[in-house]
Image (tube, rainbow, N blue to C red; front, side, top):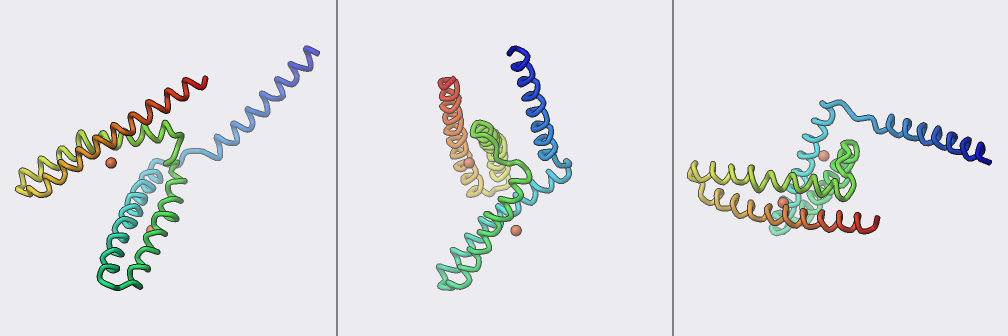
Length: 163
Ligand SMILES: [Fe+2]
Ligand SMILES: [Fe+2]
């Protein structure tokens, strides 16, 4: 009986090790250059998506429904095919808590560094309107960061609670 248990345990260990090995191989990280290119490509696709939607809005307001529809259709391809496929390759989406940590990092950078510098630089250059807008957006990013931090806190509380 005892031998049978040991045998089963060893067999299970071998199976798990093999599955783990296969999974690790199929999830082998891509080269640094490819990851860098994926990031550049995703930024471009996301920008194109947002831009084409604004172009479409402009065309629709101007009464050109056909152009608006075409721009929106293209925008959707950029976002839901190109961006999504690249995001999958790059492993952009992870667990909820890892996603939140990633988002907090991004919002923190925008709030504490990027928009602060942009606003100061715009002010120095005499672009007061831009400086003001950067500052307003910076405050929004702080709210995003704080909301994400609160969501992460709740998530971690839930996870420790369920153990
Ligand atoms: Fe594209
Ligand atoms: Fe944000």
